[in-house]
Image 1: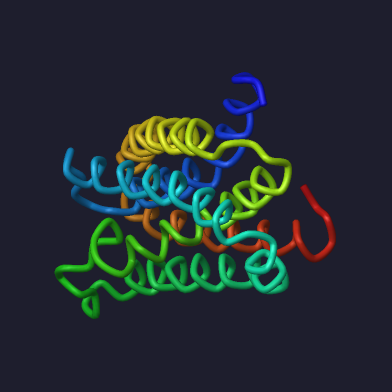
Image 2: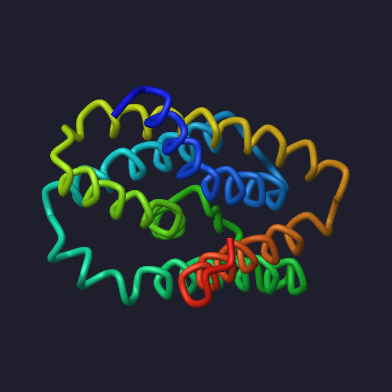
Length: 188
């Protein structure tokens, strides 16, 4: 597999991470370099690890996950999106320490945006391509793309004000719905 193909695959896999990072960054009232680092690092790490897991796990796990991977991604993103919308509408009920770049929310977002990378790892394993260089490139590209997404999201958040969190929640639900529709009826 040539480097251009690997970079193209990495960029395609990173698009969900970019959209989620943009939505999350726009929705949080306070954003620091630490938020950016956590989101970019974890998205990049999960995108790098999922192909390795797929490569080692083989086609048996792909068969098991193939029927539900899109449902998992949809459910995780819809849950977090609805939570963001709810908190924007009911600030009095907002958990003061809720931060989607920490804890289980970060893990959920990381898994939801990297499930497709698992299938790429399985595919590379089936055609006999070493996983190490592609996995590293996929992780690094996702890290950079996520960083760019957080920068864009912060600027959008400043302009959107109190609507940013609601819009961010709708975007997360939309991304989950797109993933679901891609698998169910082939919409790209």
